[in-house]
Length: 240
Image: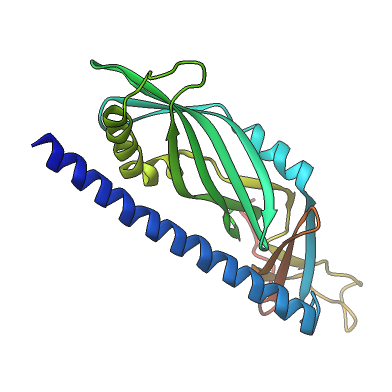
């Protein structure tokens, strides 16, 4: 019975690895296409676009302040995330998070954990702050160094399968990456002039800000933002 179960685990993990590889390659292909488009047409391609650039060292520090993180996943297993490393590859901001996985009940076991993923979904939030999510692609468990045979293949395989199944939960536990910038949500024009023919009333127009291109190149993460202005209207009068 156990042999059949372990075989199913291996087949399940093989399928997950193939899906992970597909997703990583899809992301890298999209990154190369973005670089090709920028090389042919330039970084700024519309008069309403602005450019935000963040160094990899600053982005690394932003990621570091979100750790450590601990969470419990099904199977009475605790995940501890302790360190993070950022690298740029194939126009993708790749993120490696390391920590440990511990089974809290008998039989107790522990292993080193390496999570691989990338910065994704850069967008403006409701407070007009620019942020992104870390999308995890893969989890790898390893026997702790200096403890030979601490985990046999069977125990490590079971713990690996539990972690693989909980990868969406672990991804959700990671906080958003908030960039050090805040953009206005509206264009506000003050009124001027005395009352009469030349007087201009105050006006406001909502701004829609979207990330159109993301470039992870030469130690910088560059985000191209397009700012579209809505129609001008009167300034709402608040309660007095």
